[in-house]
Image 1 (cartoon, helix red, strand yellow):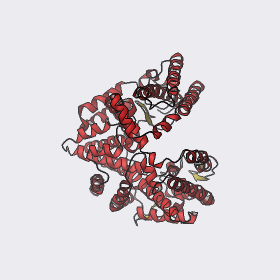
Image 2 (cartoon, helix red, strand yellow):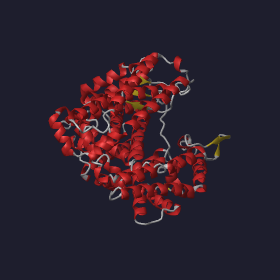
Image 3 (cartoon, helix red, strand yellow):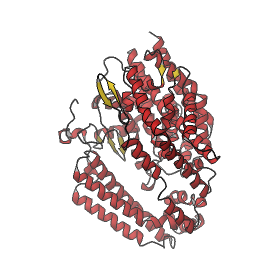
Length: 594
């Protein structure tokens, strides 16, 4: 695909069919009206949700029907827009459904307030009168769980007014970091190249070490010039987190962040502990990278170099599909049948076209790819189809109210597919360079997802803890502590440029506090599942498929416990790291067998 095509030039075989959600404008208008009709009926119950079992059941079932319709409309409008961002009609639909969505949110805000005024005893009494309500019990329990941290009505009004200004530092950060930035230019092959946020990492993959060095130093010069502004923004974010946690009677801001998904703080602590105990594997990989890339000196700006073997294979759509069927065979027939269903369905949009949103993502059953017939395209397809099949299993087993896969668990299904794909390709590979490519790619993802994200998690944990202890979060303090962490997560074989102390300033996830650890946990759980499946342990596949079908019918830790993964036990983390160790040893063996 040398030349980007227009959307109408792409074969229908490789495009999704959005009419499976909404057939046409008339159908869209009809369904929007149905949403509004349901909304009117729900609003009519205001003040009377708990006056009878019938009223509460009516609300639950009306809400389900409305949310299902609204979700379909919202997904349809946005996918229609994403397939060609230049389509003005699609953009109008996206704006239209956003307005309807906001109307629903505003007019149903009373529901949560009324639920929080009640208690479990009242709910159980209504369930005796109307047993059908029991299927909604967990939805209510999650709201009741917040009661200990809800203040008086007057206090909540004050907080509500104050929080209009909370989070604005993230908006300012985005303006400074993404819009009003000047990241400089570097000369590459006698041409001036402007550094941007989108090309920075790709420029660090340049084979010329001098280019990598210039890009690195030029890029971080921007952050050094604005270091006090970035420090002010992030320190304000931390202060807000800690202040709100204190006001809402949480022991600390970490516990506040973990509370919604009922995650125990020990899970966060176990992650840090396990990564620290297995830092040698990360160091071993860094040493192997130095040898693979033939580096006399391994600088931190060399960390994004990618291994490319000779005569890189082409992975067209059909070839990828066949590979995935074989790679995912350990998950047995039921999974493979669903995989085949996706391939034969009209839920996947494969190729890029002019105006199409970049990258890859999954939304409900729909999968958006931008396939380029590369190895990365193959791994991306495996990843996104993992999400899609997670959705199929959840839809099959759970009622609509529990079909959302919680963020804490969502990445397990996608990354497990990548692990199984890596194992299959490695076992089939005969060429040395191909084996190195497969293992380096896998371990680079481990490095980026487990070690790097945990380093970020450790940094934000330290910043929040320091602020709560009265330490002033100056730029000098934050940059010094970040540099200490970088030195902790990189071996002595890696030369650490002083500019890396500013790296924390370029990480937008820090403004979604205590979020990044979920990426690391997701891959760790995927590795545990994969190890058990590949070793053909008893009930390993069954446990995993049951996990896929769990949706949000329980808290994440309870769902994992049912699959025999107890993240409150630090020993379980070693299952994941034993598989990482195996891959590091395989890479050593391949390199040494010249």
